Amino acid sequence: MAKSALLKSSIAKKVAMALSGLFLMLFLAQHFFINMTSVFSSDTFNSISHYMGNNPLVQFVIQPILIVGVIFHFIMGFVLDFKNRSARPIAYAKNNGAANSSWASRNMIVTGSVVLAFIALHFYDFWFPEMVYKYVDVSPLNETRYFHEMTEKFESPVRTALYSISFLLLSLHLWHGFNSSFQSVGFNNKYSKSLHTLGYAFAIVVPFGFIFIALFHHFNH
Amino acid sequence: MKLTLKIWRQKNAAAEGKIVEYPIDHIEPDMSFLEMLDILNDELIMKGDEPVAFDHDCREGICGMCSLYINGEAHGPDRGVTTCQLHMRMFKDGDTIFIEPFRAKAFPVIKDLVVDRSSFDRIQHAGGFISVNTSGNTIDANTIPINKKDADDAFDAAACIGCGACVASCKNSSAMLFVAAKVSQYALLPQGRIEATDRVLNMVSQMDAEGFGNCTNTGACEVECPKGISLENIARMNREYMSASLKG
Image (spheres, one colour):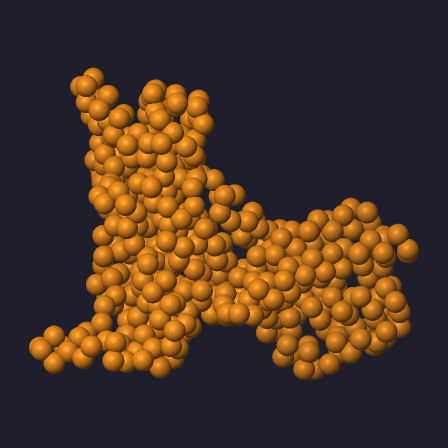
């Protein structure tokens, strides 16, 4: 089969969306565990953050892959949504979507767009200042700055609220996205029921864990 | 029962359509939905109006000819049935019922509630078959032992009647459940494995060319399918397709 035909095919796009989604969920999980250490120990959080921020493999290999993954997932999401909408030029006068599917599954583009807006805010808050600190200003290494930089951001009730709302929407995105990713890559067998339970747990524990961390620092610092 | 019907009327494929309201009375709960439409059409004909065009054939739920999007669901609010097997007992006296054609770019309206589902035929022509030598030396299929689970799964997939409820129900107008059922019913059997690679590539390629949307795993198709075709078939098709692409 011609490579161009494969790249254009609906199934290849679906699998690519799933693989990028699975990769982003892995990233989310490690980010969650690192952030959670900030609740228990500022020193641990600082040392892990310093390692992640200065390890060449993380900075120059994993980070670019992650950024490409995020951009790909969002662009492909919008492209597919546009194509899917055009596959039904005349809408139903009455459509009962709730009768056969979850709200989360029907509104991935809505929840995904909110997550995209959140990522923009997150980059503005943390990623851009970090890049400027390290690579533009070339400021001296400081292993103890990370915890303070984070808690400072969560002093604002508006920002804490925006973070919390975004993670609620991320929870809904993952509620469908986790299990949908496995279905897309062809995983549907006797283990799927257990996997679904794990997916729903992931969609609750991780986003609500992030909300807990934001609220914890808001009320404690 | 006294009902208000809101039905999509469209003179022909080129004309603009619109929802037209029809009051109807003396409907028995034991009538089928299509009998109710027959009564409406009798009344329209008696009044000299154009009857509502809708597809139907066997009225036994096996031919896949009837369609209709009823109150926001393909084949109406009941489960595991086609529109011909939907009964008026599923509705209450005084209800308003929306009746629309299956909507998709790949299912253009021909007239009123009748849509052109020949895109499904073209997908079938692209690979929904096995090539068998019928010169007189045909080997009986039953001489090849087949694992019971595979035989059952293939049979379940083959239950698809190609009605298009999956496309109509999917928010993306995706035909993946239909194509997956057709791919699976052969992929699971030794007779179908011989052409499995070409089959999945050709059928998916034709599906994409017809302008169906992409599957986002909402699962609406599985819920609304009158034959209970499982999403497992879509996962199998995805595996078959990716493995066929890598081989090719």
